[in-house]
Length: 498
Image (tube, rainbow, N blue to C red; front, side):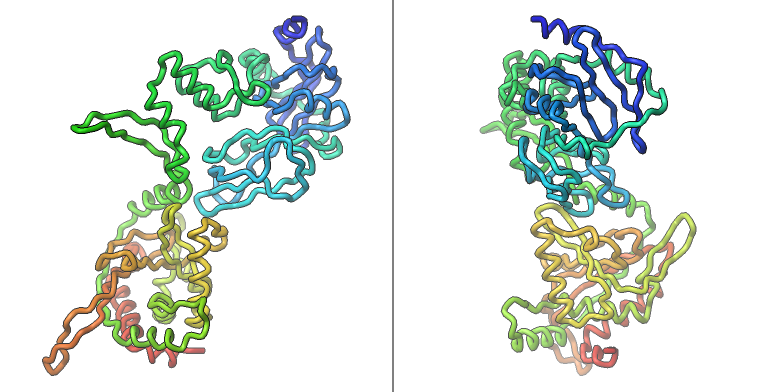
């Protein structure tokens, strides 16, 4: 009872201020009755001193909790500190990531540079490593959550020597921090931000929910159970919320039943993540660019014979020869003659950069969405080297393990829609590139020879999408004619080999 009264007292802000070099100001909060101090701020560290070893659960004003409060207090008194581990900037222009999985759990001992979790940006999946050596005190997010850059992934108990040292500084942000103290419930319950957001979504005071987790932590199931008991949600809605992981990482926002003859069918709303979210942004921008498309049919009889010859003489069981590597190599040779097709356009400065490297991107459909890794410097690679690199990128894409460098730096994109089906597609640009090519399936059709006789031909339809701000129809037509000649006469490759 005495402890409860101590915590119910209004915490006041002292006049002492602390500022960590390179961080925002930290404030010391004191209670005359309990004679304890807690340093709290939005910086990347937290530590406390002078707290009696009483095992009293504590919350600081920025929603910092420990899975074992008594142990955390003991660690602090023994000369240890608690530091925040935020999500760092994983790449240029990356503002948020999806948390895929944790490699650690609360209570685990972590070494410096040890991987702690894996996140998915709109470019690639990345392992986050720890900069500290210590013990995991609290994990703030669960797999599937969207975490913004700078938000706290977890808290660690570390040696005090590793905690950033505060120095005396400015008295700024006094009013905002004091306002936070007045609006936060110091005697609140343990829970993660996603669980609190779920409670807020249903208008539930999380302090009224009985927690079934460790140390009374309120879990997602506790909030749903409470909402059911109070009649806030229906049974179908709660059960669908609990099974959101079934949708390949797409978080279910809500579901409701619609009556149909012969049964009940549920509508489900999902949130786009990872590569699918990136596609929303890139295609929205591409749709604003003036496109034109050039369609051509190419006879692949000679290319088919070349592929069959490669496969017959193949001594490596791990290598499978297809049409695509030869198409990529011939494309690079055509680009050498028409470099404007292999360029990038900067709208702000009205400049076109002719790319020296032929980094040809290959659009790949994966369980995680559409991704476009690129083969670097195709002009200097053999068909066999292209085959192996293509196989490597495809395997990484299917495992969702592509690195940022595998995806960045593309100069032109090839989309092999024919591998799935369809004669051709009308692709949208992969900005800032100025050209993209969709390849349809190769099919046998009757063709007329010059003497009027009919013969079977393996015909492939290609559709070149171009940025009309940079490329005109005549340039694309000449480029396509050059590429077609190389495909129909692959022996010409020998003339251009260096």
